[in-house]
Image (cartoon, rainbow over all chains, first blue to last red; front, side, top):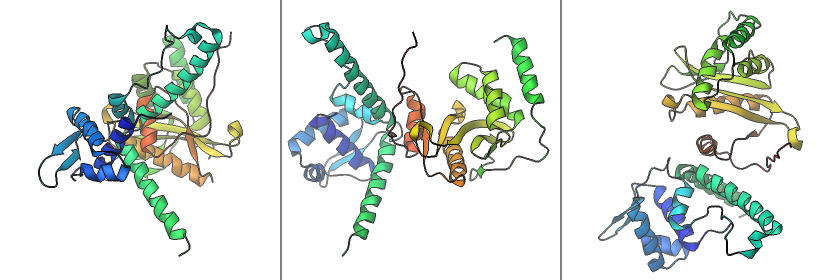
Amino acid sequence: MKLQKNTTIALCSILEAAIDPSRQIAAAHIAEKYGVSPHHLAKVLRHLGRMGLVEAARGVGGGYRFKGNAKRLTLYDIIELFEDISARPAESGDKEHTTDVGRAIANVLSEVDETAKATFRSISIDTMLKLIDREGKAAERDAAMLPS
Amino acid sequence: MPLAKKRSRKASGKAGVAARHDPPAVVARAAGSGLRVRPAEADDLDQVIAIDTEITGIEKVDYWYELFHRYGMRAHQNRLFLVAEDAGILQGYIIGEVRDWEFGSPPCGWVFGINVRPETREGGIGTLLLDAICTGFKRSGVTKVRTMLARDNGLIMSFFRSQGMMAAPYIALERDLD
């Protein structure tokens, strides 16, 4: 599964901000770190702000802060703000869905979609922060084991 | 289930359990409270059944007595049925066992039942129970714990995820028997 660019930017922005909710994070920092255009990022952040998940801070050093409930907010909650990953019902216009072969393929795709949705629904921001921490520690361990 | 059958099953369940005179061994304690995790006793079953019934909406008296005979009373060191108790009130339970080569998997711990009273959730009881059973699994020599749950059981799935559990390299399959 591949998420749309806006969704990925939203997930990265939320997670970066949720690492330390007391800290203001500069949009420029996120744009540079993830290689996205500031304009694109601003649009995503505005949407997240309207949904009450981040709070914009104006002025010198302005940025944004995480405002959501990290234990309650799931990856799915964020994803569905930007795209619909629901299992797609057979569309009447698609001729393949009128065939046994087409319906069988649709069943398999639906199974994949349902599994993906269940996974996204079960992972909270808080759980993601633990995963990020674990990844960081693993990277540090790997770096320490490299011959100098 | 007819009440008479339920009662007789309960009675035989309790009669079949040797009375314990020594207090159950504490497996874990919560810091700053009286909550402790210990092996399930026969007298705990009414509360275990009540918790399960409250959460699932289905009372399964026979099932629980059967389960207790197999997993309770420290029946086998690889089988664990633990309860979290505070001043005589059960707040939750967990059941699991070490299974060898199940589904081709090297020996590992399996958790197949966990529940915490809805009103005391988010207080660390589930974590305490899971940690306690994992300690038991480790003592049996295994290094991995697994579980299986309904895809739409978001609450329990989120709990296991929050404990660091990830998707296992196994997929559950089923089909209708027609």
